[in-house]
Image 1: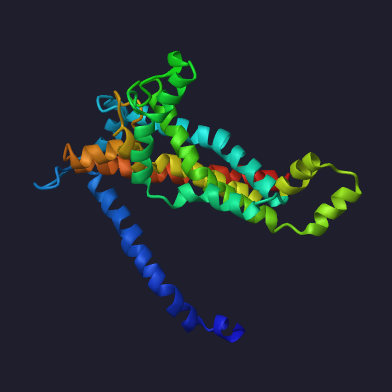
Image 2 (image 1 turned 60 degrees about the vertical axis):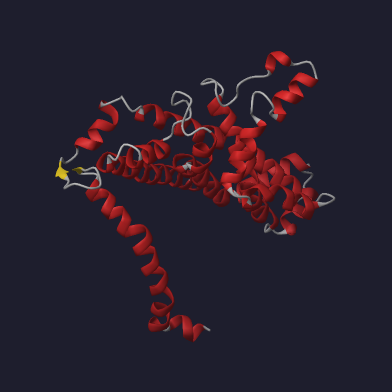
Amino acid sequence: MQKLLGDKKAIFLFIFPTFLIFTVIVIVPIFFSVYYSALDWDGFSEGIFVGFKNYIDLFQNNIDGFPKAVLNSLLLAVLSVGIQLPIALILALTLARGVKGEKTFRTVYFIPVIISTVIIGQLWSRIYNPDYGLLNTVLRSIGLDNLAGRWLADPEQALGSVFVVIVWQYIGYHMLIMYASAKSISSEIYEAALIDGANEFAIATRVTIPLMKPIIRTCIIFAVTGSFKSFDLIYTMTGGGPLHATEVPTTLMYTTIFSKYQYGYGSAMAIFIIIECLIFTLIINKLFSEDVTT
């Protein structure tokens, strides 16, 4: 095995197919998008080179609401890190310490992750339906008619309603990653902490969580970049409405390219999303690296 790993030709043969697929599917489309973002192009006629005009228009031309879409995605990222990940961490720590039915709970929490996002969007759209939806029906049945609302039709409630579904769908994903990390910690460390008189809360906060920081960092990156790239669930449930209340850059990009045929302007949005994800990934890595050094 060591001889095989030391053979550069063997390494190249194993890596090259994956590198080729990654280049064709990811790298090449990014370069095409960069090129298209410098054009005023409708996808059919000959494009006109406009330089950085499309990027400038993203924030100067507020007609399409791109700044609001960016703020919505940032809000989803903050909520994901501040609400979704702590809940996932608590569930992971609880299961990792050993509870009755551990495997069952682990499987149940992960089920929403493997369900099609389109199906989830359709399911929750019916739950939120103001007339026959399960949520309003339950609220009315227990005498809370004043709390029943038009969840996806109210601009003030729509984004929060969609976020609840995002939490429900992906909390099991982050939980399973953190759970695997917590289970990988040696039992000898816990035994030593117990001998020193530490209780369960102290073990979790001073032993388990510090040792899980690399995985927590990964989950934060996934949550933040996932919020920036979220599309299918929002598009299925609201299409970015009402009144752009749930609009995010990806849904706006889709509408701009495939409904308004502004390929250059839409490509500029795509590049902005890529740069945004890259910048926040570097920031998160930097924050965690500084935390490790201190």
